[in-house]
Length: 85
Image (cartoon, rainbow, N blue to C red; front, side, top):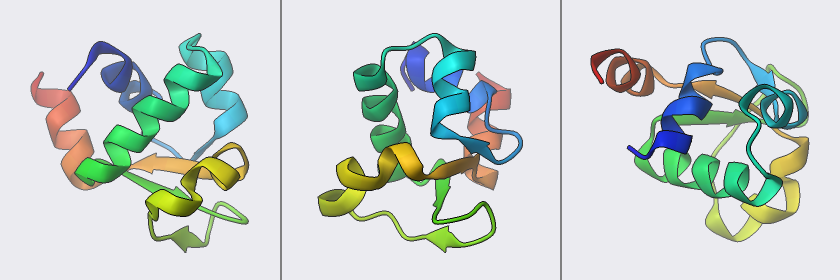
């Protein structure tokens, strides 16, 4: 897990919007998207769209188009890895 991915997971103990993540992590938009993509591919984060209650399966092809409108939450595995680092 990279440092930016760790910082992202640090903010995902509760469902959080992309915009809030941008503000809280201080990462650039590109870095945040890259970190989220990596975490989603590893199964460490879950995404929700169009609202915080509707889980969206990660699809690489559509991630870039809707990533800014999604909400995110660390998965159980993500929380375990975050807490054991």
